[in-house]
Length: 311
Image (cartoon, rainbow, N blue to C red; front, side, top):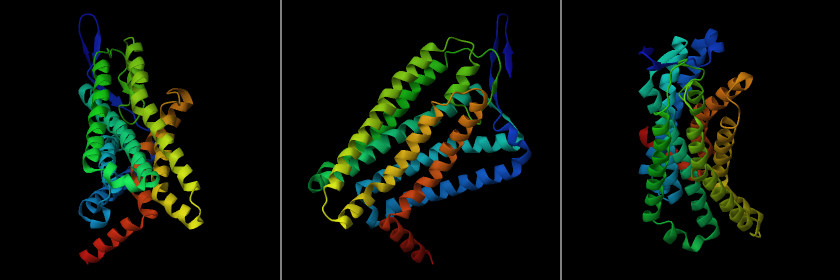
């Protein structure tokens, strides 16, 4: 919808196209996405429930895992319900304010997960490289400070971007060729100079992505040095197993993020970008609890105990 005045046309809502080339398969596509969304919610709520109630899962590592599970729930819920409407209606409108709100929530959670993964890598560094001081250093005060700062910093940074986006004029096309209100497709529709917003995103990527990624890499360099210094093969395998799940999740998360925001949002690559975004938003939160559970005996044991108690 567009509102006309004497000098310009202002966009008041956007039309989200989704995957228009898949409209002929909308019912199976809808069913698959709905099933994956439902499984994601159930899996991550299970992780949160286990971490909150199981005596076996009271260590700092599971504390952070519980918050990562909560962030994954918020991430998929900010995008998927509207995406399901887009699929079934073969495109759906979203108000201008709603579009900014969706990007705000999505961007804030994505940034939060960057900080959470960094905090989890620091936790693994202390546990493996400084085991004698682990409990005293990774105390409750530090854990809650890391969680609080992760959420506050992330949404503060994204709020700055939203304030700049809200100052842009949208007076041309209102069609978003994506399945949600992401940064690149919004900028493409603006008829204002977007240089300032792009500079802001580049600057904010330093404390959000670059610094966290460097912290993770440095933590794992020290972790691998410590692991390779262990004399027994079984000792190395046992120590590595305590951080392998987190390492896999970090690789998937940062790999997907890097591809999404480096693949150009135009031409054939636009479809590639949308597909990678779909994997990042729908598949990654689904896989995270599975990855952490497959090699974790404490989580498996807690799940079995819960199942036996419910029978």
